[in-house]
Length: 222
Ligand SMILES: *Cc1c(COP(=O)(O)O)cnc(C)c1O
Image (cartoon, rainbow, N blue to C red; front, side, top):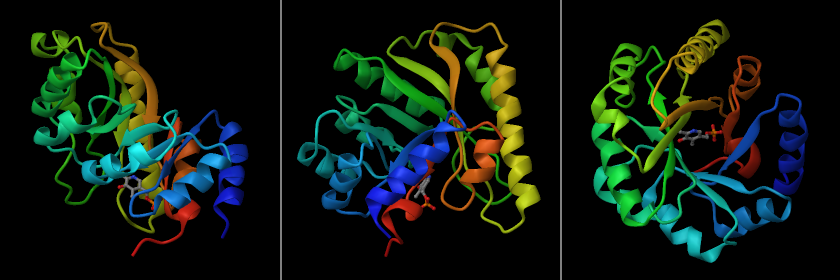
């Protein structure tokens, strides 16, 4: 499997859905990222701060680095100067820390709320009710160094296609619902991050604007 060909394949497919590709490069070497970059890919996703920090200085400055994995509050400061989008905001406490670190480096950091959509034990994410209350609170409205630009979700890891489709569909419904609400200026629903190697086709059909694909581009991880 050639990285260049895979980037080309996804660029053409995603264009039909008005969707963009986050090339998930976790565990893969900078040489592989460089290959994808040379094929025109600019958005890369990493799930660990440490790994992003090691790779970022070795690669072109116009790469947009997306953090897609669980983020610990004590690590936000390391990526605040350059991270382009944080997909995995799963608590108010974390968002407050991102706001604080963004202010320090004079940036407004774009973020997505991670929503709990899977019917399986996952530790991270907001549920719908909790999120709706939070985005209407003064506590949230006062965060001026972050901007929420959408939602992220992960479907259940299962072969049951019907279930996966329902989970994506419910995330899109929540996205549409929030989009219609009259909220503060630090939130605007533009991006819906859903779909991975296993389920990207269905995610795009259900309205994804950002698919996060690793294995289908870079091969399997050890
Ligand atoms: C690893 C990862 C992906 C990509 O998974 P693949 O199955 O390799 O495409 C997407 N999203 C998150 C949050 C990940 O951790």
